Length: 147
Image (cartoon, rainbow, N blue to C red; front, side, top):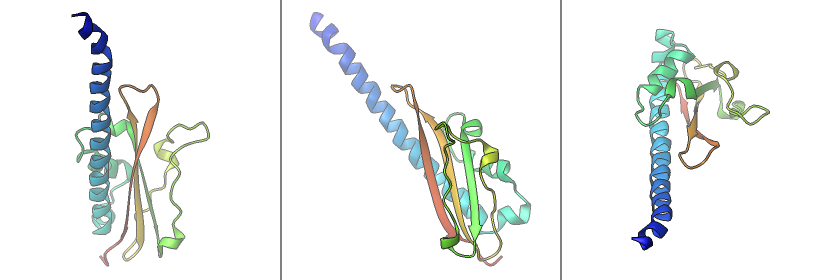
C-alpha cells in the first residue's frame, strides 16, 4: 500500500498529461477540418451569395467542432483575399501583450470570383496541467471558383 502511495501521484500526473496531449491534438485536427469547411464555403461562393458575415462564418465553423469547448467565444477567424497569394500577408493573432486579439482586430474579406483566399482560424486552448494557454492555429489557402 505504501508503494502505491509513492507511485500514485506520478502515475496519475502522467496519465492526465497523456489525456491532455491527446485532447490537444484532437482539438488541432478538429480545428483544421472545421477551417477547411469554412474555406470551402468561401471558395464555392456560398458566403458571398448569402452575405454571410464574420460572426456567421464563425458559427458555421464552430458547428463542425465538438472538442473545442467555448468555441463561439474563444475562436477568431481571419479571411483575406487578393488577386495572388503574394499580395496576402498572414495575420498575427496576438496583440502587444501576447493575448489573442479580439474579433474586430481580424480582417474579413472573402473576395470575389477567382480571388486567392487565406482563411485562418485561431483558438485559445486551455490545457489541464498548464496554467497558460496555447493558441491553436489552422489556415487554408484556396482560390475562389468563378461563381
